[in-house]
Image (tube, rainbow, N blue to C red; front, side, top):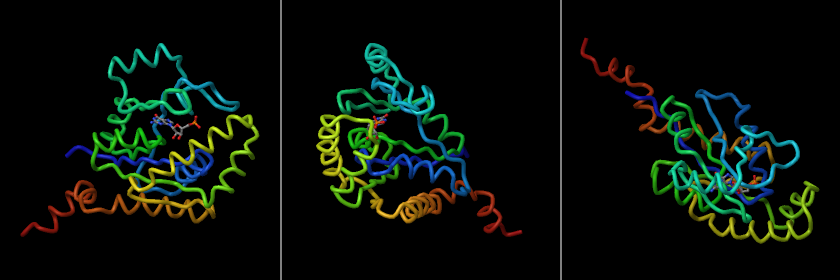
Length: 209
Ligand code: 5GP
C-alpha cells in the first residue's frame, strides 16, 4: 500500500508565535519525517528571509498566471498580498509518507478542508490581546499603521477559531510546543494511520500458522 503522510494545518494571528512553534516541532524527536510546505507569495521579502526557504517570492503577474494554471491547492489574499500553497509539492511529500504542515490562514484552511476532509487543523491563540500587541511591537519591523492593520487582521483570524480541530494557547512556549507534539502524535496513533504502517504486523497477528 502507498505510504501516506498526515496533513496538518496551523493557523494563527500574526504574533501568536506560530513560526517558533513550528521550528520547535521540527527539532523535536519524531517517529516520522516532517516538512513545512513552502508557500508562494507576492509580499516583499523581510530582512533575514531567504527565497525558496521561507517563501517562493514572486510578482503579482506570475502569481496570477499560476492561479490560472491551477498550480495552487489553495490561495488567499492576506494583507493585500497573495499567498498560495502548491498542490504538487504537498501531494509528492504525502505520497512519500512525510507529514506535511501548512502554515496558512483561515481562508486557506477552509479551502484545504474541502479538498482533504482528513486534514488535522490546529489554531494557535495568543494568551491575550494585550500580549499579542506587545509581541507585534517587539518585532520592531513594522510601522504604527501596519501594526494597527495587523491587530485588526488578528481579530479577524481569531474569529474563526471554532473551525479548527485543536486549539493551543501559546502562553508558556514549552507547554505549547509539547501540546503541538501531542496533537501530532495523537493523529499518528489513530487506527486509520496505524493500519497502513503496521500492515505486516496485523497480517502476522491474524495468521493461523
Ligand atoms: P506573513 O506575511 O507574516 O509571513 O504571513 C501572513 C499570513 O499569511 C499568515 O497568517 C500565514 O499563515 C498566511 N499564509 C502564509 N502562506 C500562506 C498560504 O500559502 N496560503 C494561505 N492561505 N495563507 C498563507
